[in-house]
Amino acid sequence: MRIISDHLQGRKTNLSDSMAAELDWAQIYRYAQIHQLEGILFHQLQAFFAGKKEYISIASQLEKSKAACIYYYALNSHAIDEIQNTFQVYNIRFFPVKGLEIASCYPIPMYRTMGDLDIVVFPKEKVKASKTLEKLGYTLLEKNFGLQFRKQSINLELDTHLLHKETLENNKRRRYFDTCWKYLIVDSDGKYHLDINFHYVYLVEHIKKHFRTRGIGFRQFIDLAVFAQKHSELDWEWIKIQLQKIDLWKFAVLAHTYIYIWWGMESPFSIEKLEQNFYEETTDYVFSSGVFGFENKNQSLYVAEAYLNSDRRTGFFTHFIYIMRNTFIPYSKMITLPYCSFIAGKKWLLPYGWIYRVYYKLKRKGCSGKNKVSIESKEIMDNHRNLMKKWNI
Image 1 (cartoon, helix red, strand yellow):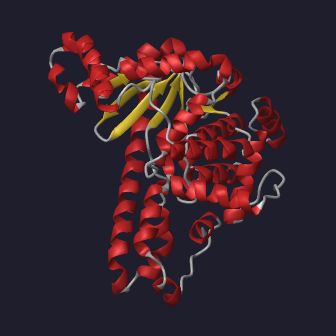
Image 2: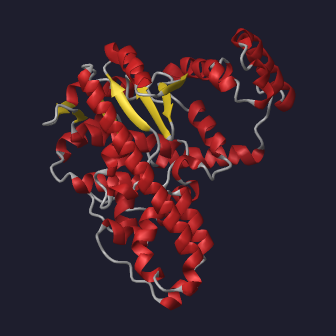
């Protein structure tokens, strides 16, 4: 926590030899990995590691991770520039979200890890955008909630909505974020960007989604902190009204309260007084989850719990879409499944592959409709549900 705080506030990290000797560096590296903070960690400790043979191993691991972070940042930066320039030629209007837009707010942007490139295009220009990406060398992998493309080491998602009907969000939030087109601004180069106030509101929504399904790490909270810090011109009164409209005001206040307690960064809102048990529960929840929940063996339970408690008015539709998308998966994904590889090169066998996949899963795991949730799983889900209630989500 101290290292993150030092980095966000522009301070050097002073670590004594005696303190360093007591640290479990293997554990520190593991946590840096699951929270995707290796670059920041190396940057802050590089001076301490210099000339110390006993730390060669951990320093080397962190430096390699930092180099990878810089590489993917440069790769994604080049990719988005190429896409923006090409789309301008073909008069395709789009705007980027998350990723590089948030990285630009970091003290050192290239240390913010990169996942997919996320771009949103005007609905009427989706087909043209897809064909243009293929001309640039991108391969369409699958049509999920958005269009998933890949080019070498670059993963890109093209979409026409910020939220989907198939997600766990209620109709009110989906309708709200469908107004994003009203909040576009054009920079001096003719490129589109979301208005920073609306982008902040969307960032809160996005972090809430990860928080709800336990795919949340410290990096997502850092994203919120640096965005608010970088854009001092944010209209907090307007933002408060918007967050209240979509029932995310309390969540945002709590998020900034934790950011203040963890790293000492001033909150644009009033600081909540937290009960010790609530503070410890949330900190442990985030600490043990990691970015995207990769290290969390119980994550599927949290996703299931979130589905079970989604908006009741759209519950049937949500569950129906979830079942359809997980049963009738595209050919490109089917051939990657070892037990369905027999359809490779034989697209006409895809319907049979779907049937066989259902049979295989039922034979292996039993009929999910008759499965009973274990007492342990029920307790985990109940605890998760109670924490979500405290966060008002």
